[in-house]
Image 1 (cartoon, rainbow, N blue to C red):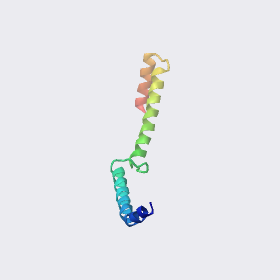
Image 2 (image 1 turned 90 degrees about the vertical axis):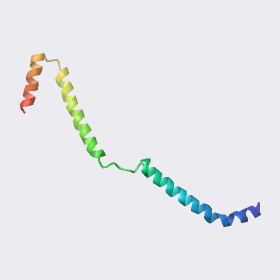
Image 3 (image 1 turned 180 degrees about the vertical axis):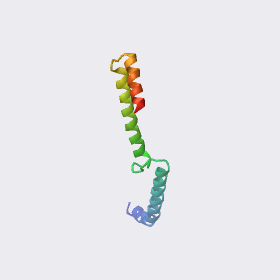
Image 4 (image 1 turned 90 degrees about the horizontal axis):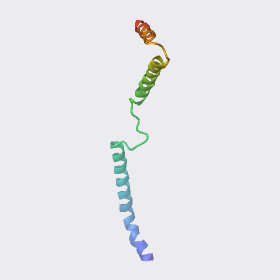
Length: 84
C-alpha cells in the first residue's frame, strides 16, 4: 500500500490540472446554457413592472364587468373612461 502512495504522488499535479480544466469547462457551460443562479436578465425588472401594471388593469376591468351594473350603466362608465 505504501508503494502505491509513492507512485501516485508524481501524478498529483496532472490530476490537479485536469480538475482545474474540468471546473472551468463546467463553469463556461453553465454560463452558456443559463444554469447559473446569479445570471441576471437586464429586462427582468422591466417585465415585472409591466406585469404588475397589466394585472392592475385586468383587476379594474374585472371590477367594471362584475359589479352588477346594467348594460347601459356599463356603457356609460366605459365612455367616461375613454373621455379621460
